[in-house]
Image (cartoon, rainbow, N blue to C red; front, side, top):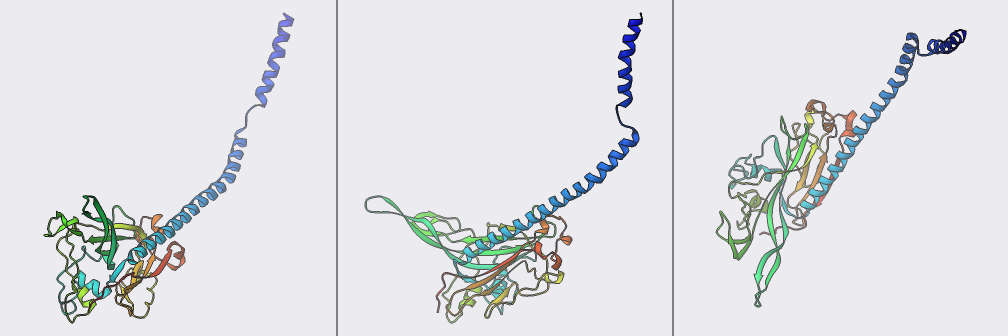
Length: 333
């Protein structure tokens, strides 16, 4: 019996001692939580700051890259230009001036230019169409030859009040109507009497240089399209600065001698995309100076009033410009 009591007492004593020394008191837990809060909170703030900075820098980098790519695309397009319209020419095609300035023009000849869709670059270009013309030689073998077509191209700066699928900034869209390849052995296209191997776009009509005693600019400004178009502008790049000069955007650059600004300089002009154009230079070629400015803030904030240009946030508005001369020209008497 004594042995049993001794065994029980010897087994229970360590257990009581262990239970007495295990766990933390409430005060110890509160102190540990306070220390953890003081250590973790600055680390979380530091981590959030790093993530925000990274997203901001990524937005800036994306805008810079897209601005450069868009300018490269426009440059390659303009290098094929044979005639670039200045502000007066665009006004004639848009039907926004009186008939004394553009006597042959009649209403809008472009794709629905409105205050929210402003045409900035409008030009005719000549481009090669690979293997467009087919013919059969004496041996009965079908041969394909390259040809070229004329097309009218327009770049718009679009800023809608409540865009649904685009940013709160502005965007650049490209619109084009192209001629076809006439081929007596081809097929008849809807709306055209000639036969084509490649049909013209709906509404296309070539410019007319047959007028006598009229300047080249007057001839090109009097162009009238062939009717309703089914081509719509295709967006080239989004997140273009939408800020007007009146809202604090930088003033547009002074155009070079013999160049005129498009659209015409005014406080209501959005200077995120504009050009200086010389339709007919001394060597009879057209040239343009193109200016672009992006808006990286619009990638981070979905509020148009909070993503306008400001000098203190100029790093969010990357800009680029280039001067391009058309590779060909129109000869007319």
